[in-house]
Length: 336
Image (cartoon, rainbow, N blue to C red; front, side):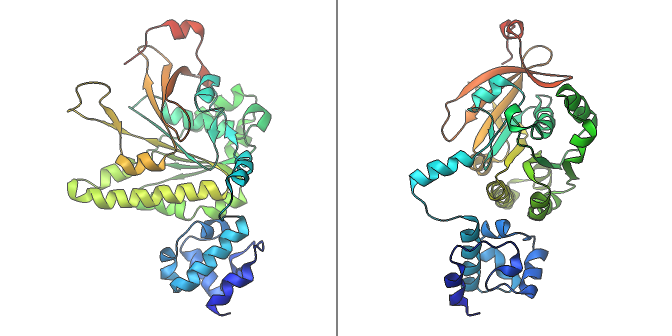
């Protein structure tokens, strides 16, 4: 088929397989799969330049991508149509009513929510809780879905999944079956896992994608000022892949992030998340976690959101998981 005919033949037809797309034969489809594009959804979220290694011309690539986008409904629309589409955005409970209230009812699908804070503030614990919560029915704040969990610091513990599942009245073994887990050993491996995740997401009804933590490998491998630019470029590509998957499959994307102290800050909080503006601009919702001065109490501060005001709430992390703090807990002195 001629390259200029690809666009004309699309006409918003629904395609299921790469081989079905006009201009994509079996050989091209195989090359795309080797590059990590296994579904129409993932192809719709890419760029023409990224398809060059498959031997596809820029003009043909643009036509194929446009057809894929048309197939899943990615195009210019009016704002009133967007308002209707926003009704398709789902929300996942954190386990705490006050934290849910902080983010307007729960963590949104089709966006990236970032939790950052110092060691021991509960970032991974929240990720464990979300793994369980996403499997709840919608009336209990869940999405009736499975989880894709990329672990970069070996912090995932099945014991916590068991205790949290039992507390919510779920079968721990069944909950564990719905968590697709992978440990990333390097930043390249971390990126590879997401680059090849689209088929796994589609086949397993994944509604939550977690990267815990986003920056650990990048921080340890790209050392020195001369490595800052390439590190940021790769982080940028990685996060855009994540948001592409979240949008294509209407899933919640969650990343945790490490922090660093800025010694030149004399007023306010000197703790800042790793990743600079790249991570800051790509994360739609940023939540800063810190410990209170006692026990299981944590403070969640909404630092950034496209439409919500800043604010903070007190919650706690116990053997049962993420829970609301009692009135007695709230009256105790807070940490910094």
